[in-house]
Image 1 (cartoon, rainbow, N blue to C red):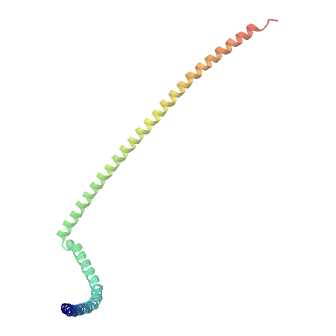
Image 2 (cartoon, rainbow, N blue to C red; image 1 turned 120 degrees about the vertical axis):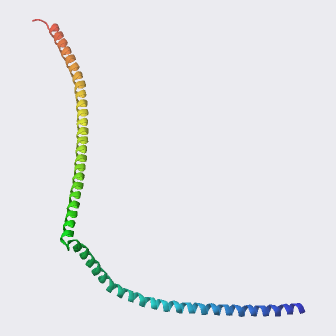
Image 3 (cartoon, rainbow, N blue to C red; image 1 turned 180 degrees about the vertical axis):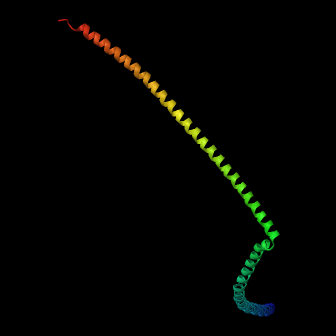
Length: 174
């Protein structure tokens, strides 16, 4: 019996110690979570302010950047025409570009025309072939039916002539 009492008191001490440790651990976890939440809230507020400030900056910087880009484009466009010799060079360069583009367009138009002509020729050949085949088919049918009709007509004539001859032979002469 003495051993049971010892075990119980040891178990109680261990259980109490475990409960105490668990309580300390959960308290530390709560403190960490609270600190993290507070930090996140502060960051979110700061981030919100930063976002508003950034939007305000963008509203100012976008038109400034667009104006500077437009200015650079104007300067780049006007620069070749500031002196007579550079203006002449620029005009010649543009004329060369125009003539190159015209030749390119002419080649492309020529290619399109040739392609269209080939397609028309193929279509015409195909249609002519179909018409020729249909005409030959109709001629064969007409010839075949015509031969049969001529044969039947000759037979009918023959039968009629024979019947008429018989009718004449069997009629009494009055």
